[in-house]
Length: 171
Image 1 (cartoon, helix red, strand yellow):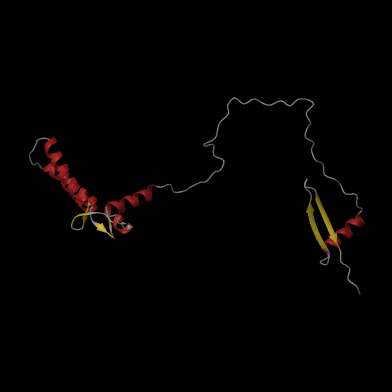
Image 2 (image 1 turned 90 degrees about the vertical axis):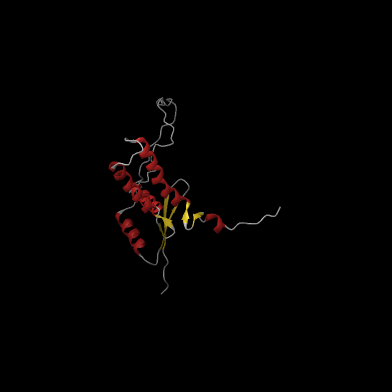
C-alpha cells in the first residue's frame, strides 16, 4: 500500500460542501429551516401559517444568515464568539502568592511547649564603641578621604567588619 505525507495546509483548511460554503455555514443556514419545521408543528394552529409564527421565524432567519457571512476567511459567528470571550474575561488579574488555595489546613494544632532546660533565644545587644571623640573624628576623616580604600566585609555569622586602608602619598 502506498503512503504519502499530507501537508498541514490541507488538513487545516475548512472543508467546502457547496461552492464556498463550509460546514458551519451550512449548519447556520439549515437551522432556520429546522426551527420552522418545529414551530409550525408544535405551536397552534398546527401545520398552518400564521402571522405570529412568521414574525418569530423571520428575525431568526435573518440572524442566522448574517452569522453565516464570511469576513476575512472567518464567519461572523466566530468573530462574535471571539469578541464575547474578550468582553467576558477578567478585567484585572491580581497575583497573590499568599493564597490559601492548594494548601493543607490544620485545624487540630496545639501549642508546642518547650521544656524548661531548652536553650532560650538570646536577644542580641548592640556593641557600644569605646572610641573617644577625637578618634571618632579621625575615623570619619579617614572615611571621607577619597584615597583611602574603604571595604565592608561580613563573616559567616553576619558580623560586619569595616577596613580602611589609607594610602599615604610620598612628597
